[in-house]
Image (tube, rainbow, N blue to C red; front, side):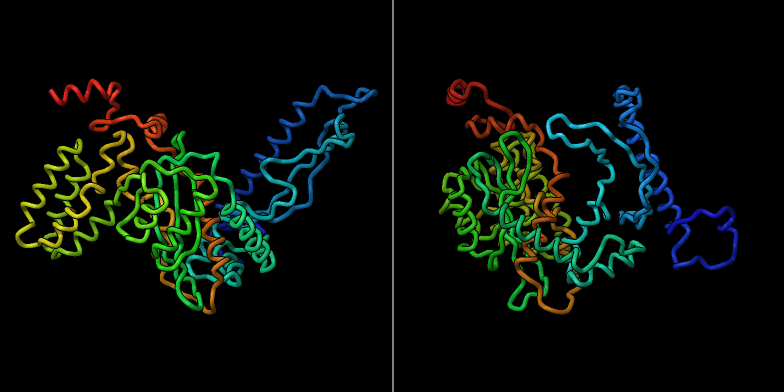
Length: 426
């Protein structure tokens, strides 16, 4: 384990275990910080109960040495922990049992930090089989403490159960005003074909983002998307006000069948890529700038002016590229009818794309077939971990107004729509 030997850095002897000095310093720093945090936590606990004494005047909560050393696997590597022990002789009046001190920093049976557990789904979706987890992390972190093949198997089974419970939950108590949809292709060594994850992420009426649904489909087909949307509707999901997705016909056909009243917004990132694919590389810089002027305009009227300029510049030579904009123009500019604070969120499917970015770019394919159920469970845990870091949309208070049917002009709320209409008519 870690030791600090004064002057060791000045010797010419090779370091034991092949680790570098900086790795040892990082782990030693983590060990000391953890020890100080645990000590401060115990001191605070004892101080809060210092006045509680028995009939002989002795304190009921006191220090009682230390626990046996244990190794905890953290993102900084394996760290040896010696936690202080507390003797709590108080009796809980409700249960009749003795009170017990429980560390919020280091639970009793903790052998690895949650961050390590979050890494496992990502490794699987990157093409690493579950049997490779222990040696891979052991080589990277310098220890396999808290990791074993049986532990990984238990985690996988637990995650499968959690994903299945999630996919059956009631949706009637949550109102998703905006909805992002995308199909993520993950090539994880399946015997028949690659895994296609159908992902729905929504914005609640309070402005918070969360995973709505996740399932496996077949090449983003219309029927696969329809099955997912129908299942959401059966479980009580209301029709979103606006759905954002790429140009895949499968999703839009399913949306029109299940939630025909939902408005459509095409993803500008995907549309830009499609337009550039129809242009020579020499025209890409100018085309990118022209397209940016469309989706980054001050309002819808100026966006239409930018569309007209794009058509004038490229129609003669590159009519196919111009048609890609004209055919989906209403759906590409739909976000302009919503609050300006929400525009940057509604133009693309970035909430889904960014979550799976590292998985999309994986290049290694390992031996043996993977499990669709395991792949789905791993993807669920990956999103669940990422979800804790998602922030609410800008102007979260405006989301409820969107659901209520409020009108927005140039991104600003129209507080008296009738008067505004009469003014325009005049």
